[in-house]
Length: 514
Image (cartoon, rainbow, N blue to C red; front, top):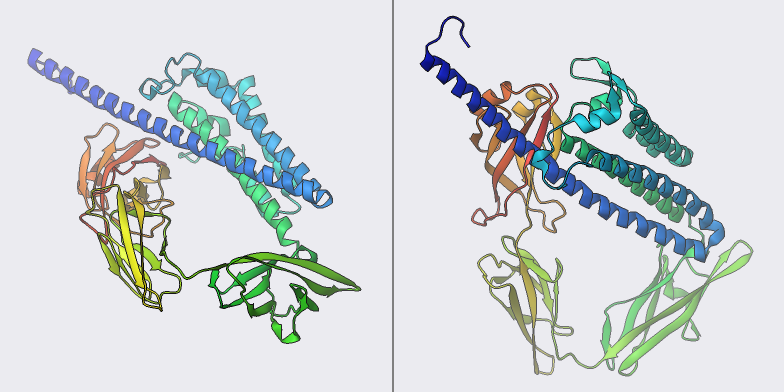
């Protein structure tokens, strides 16, 4: 404020201005706190999913041990140690969270979690790290060193990644000054931001465990190249045959090798001619038989050294009467989505040409290929009716229902990254704002048409297009180092169907590094 003697009116104006700035900062703080809370919830969900996946890995490994103990027991012992170390660290982090949240009555009321005193007192005192803080660093160091030690000989790249990802060495801050890792990551931050960082650390632990378990199991499976581990697979030319037809198909091994040829093949008690054994597969050609379930039994015989390795053949096929119903399959599951062209394959076994009808269904490409657009269909289900003529002139018809779903909620991105992003001002100034549909079955592109840009202490800027405009860049220049800006209320449309209304797009939080 200007110096000198001020009039009562000017003093009142100055006071109102200060109150207005404080209110803007308060509102921005609440929104940022809520955003961190939502990020923490998403990370927690990801942690639960990864935990389930890791348990499935361990369960599959336990089954392998019961089947082949000598081969898989050493692998299982390493996996159990890694699982134990991971569980110990994540449980310890849960205890730290409990200390931080001990006085919080509602753990989902993120807007009150703006203080940093509890964690600062727990980890720091008088500018030094407390015994609790040193214990936290020790726990991370123990996990990093023990897990990387287990995998370093067989997977040195993963071991190096673990050493880097869980490093507790000093970190260079934005002023190019070396500071303690613990202070850099946890000192002075709002409570909900620290909770989110701790959840992210748990996510790193679980993801590391998943990466190691996957590498260990796949590496062991790749080593199993002996012929005694092959499986014989019967592949018929079609899944069922009419009475009076010949069965046609082939038998291949789980690992197809053009240089591989059996010493002898016996099927249903009959040794096949040498001409039937070709480039890693055996050609079958015999009468299909009467209507009903038919077995295929026999064995492959291979020479391996001085021994004969025998691989059993056990399969079956069905001989069915002439068809009286249609077979309809959706190329993208039994669900069709609004806003996209859903590819469909529609056919009737034994019928070369069929007629299919449904709202939004159009023929596209070769025989049996269709696309279906249900954007304007209000119902939650749609029926496809199919009819065709058999070679004898008889007509067969059938119908099937498919569920209709909307395109899932998109996720906003900055420079292709979603969630919480660290970036310099100059990088954000040039970055593009986008939207993606992670894990969606269709490869579709979204075009951003506008968004809102929030900088702490500055008014929200409405931006058209997918990049910061001059007003947004002006607000960005006023942002403080280490503060967070938000890209919210992102508007986007499908590049192939601009009229389709997408669900609300998730925001992006950008932490400014300089």
